[in-house]
Image 1 (cartoon, rainbow, N blue to C red):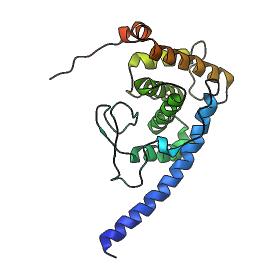
Image 2: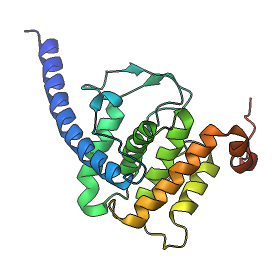
Image 3: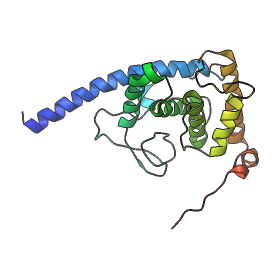
Image 4: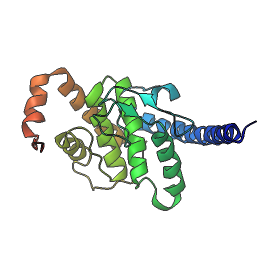
Length: 212
């Protein structure tokens, strides 16, 4: 076997091992998200086919813009690199003992998981992505530029309404589950009523002109 082929085989084997470890983490965290959204409905079990995953760094998936909440790319770019989800899962796990969920890697993991979970509960496209961004933010304390800032602010305000701003909350906590149900209902209402969305969200959004 040529050296180049041997190195590729070794890289693939190492990538498969990383992928297996990452999927165990993803399934564990998915079940936590599932528990937290229990008042909204059952999102079902984890399915790796719902996520962009790859074994080696050169793996590339072409996917429609605006659908993926992954950190790796601009929302306008058509090319997505699935290794970012895997890397974020493994890095989150490595840092967890010291920092818990308070990492940027955890933020993007939960954006991915919560966005897909919200799709199973009826949200679509940018509404699902914005819900995922809000969930990731209140879980980790970090903020991702996904969706409209107003959507994230409303999510944040509804989640922490009349309670101390503490990101170290339990997934099974009844008040948490009830707040997430209220928030999901709000997002569903926006999705179903364009006029309501414009009144509560779009009318408050600040548009910054692009420099050309």
